[in-house]
Length: 528
Ligand code: FAD
Image (cartoon, rainbow, N blue to C red):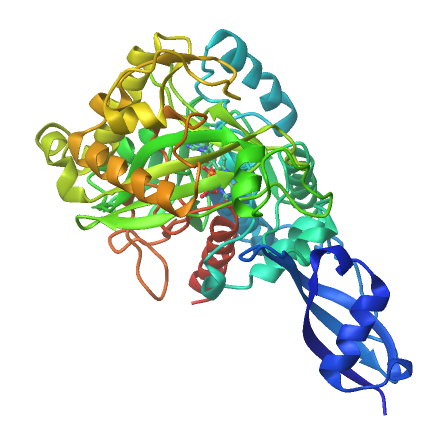
């Protein structure tokens, strides 16, 4: 009788794409004769580069004595709303907002997205001024606009949030809207910034075709609350328009500082939470490849191997020091949202073929570390802490989005770099004492952490390693609390804080998952 099996096989890199070698490994693992293996298909794929001989681990779906169930490529499949549905206002068109809107449609509710930035095509043209002239367009940049901070990003789709929800559903939704099918099988899926804008545009199309609404250049400046301030009714836009609905899902990301200010001004409960700050570290990608794949420097990486990535973490005196959002074959980009600041982050294209590897290198900041800002800024102390560093980076860089830079070895030694290595950061660098500008608590831990990482990865803190300041937008310094069961704010009914800005996500996929969850909470609330 025909049967379906899932089997894990491991092959050396050189033979991993050879179908005969795959079949042989499957037969050996399942103890079946080759003629009984009717069909097999890759389900998951990962690289094991821990030893000198690189191995490829594959999970295979196998049809024994019969075919496999047919593979159906995911397609958008949203039933058109009939009109008269309950309206849900979604603030922010990032991954959280978009996935919340799609889920609203599936649940028979009408989503109305309001987004301060422009659609992904128009937004692209606003990245030119920041790169070439150092001029930030404050509502349209690397953080704001269609697709949120995820559109012009590194597009890594792996998440540690596997327990938070159906990650596979998120991948399938992305594939249905044009992301490469490979993300369904890669253990570390990635969609580059050249592909992401079309994916988010296609998702917008699905929302519109089903009867939802998406409004760009529609910045929320106020909330509409019931007379007793206990229920959220809608939002007020900068041009005076009012949008109302059964619930407001607030998915404005971690850079919407005016929204945190608005919440604070209205006395709406928020909590300080830990976040992390530091720098972007940049190396030549071939150096990282040679370290991670145990190659001699200069040997070309085989086509089948992706640009190597790494993850480093340690704890120094009760604070984490760790790499963050590592971008193999990527670029460092100016991710500021205002003109008086410099913020660095990383992005890449689908091929990840830039000659540079970059990563955030950050130290955890606990609420008590922001105490010097608390008197003046109260609950917004963490944001003031971030902003202070961003302004210092701008001043040290010399303006027009130039970033302050320092070689890693000089950072550790505490001296100014005479010269700086080549960088992917387009606005350019100015040599500066990052070790002095960073708060001492961050700086000394970073030095110890970097030395440790240099022992783990030979060459990591060598001559070619460079640091750029500052990486401040790793996550939100605030959490907007919500009730466990209903996800509503504990003090304001029908108000659902969502995604990274509210403190419930830390990346594209976890934000998308939270969006889905918030739409489901809105539906449960309406049903009650
Ligand atoms: P956001 O994506 O921040 O979306 C919030 C949206 O709300 C924005 O579009 C904003 O314009 C809008 N908004 C804000 N205020 C208002 C207002 N007042 N009115 C109306 N609209 C408003 N994560 C990964 O998982 N992998 C990566 O490779 C990766 N690379 C990144 C690279 C860069 C350069 C950056 C900046 C981020 C990267 N991230 C990455 C992080 C990821 O993009 C975020 O975690 C994710 O986008 C958060 O989703 P969100 O929907 O919660 O918020």
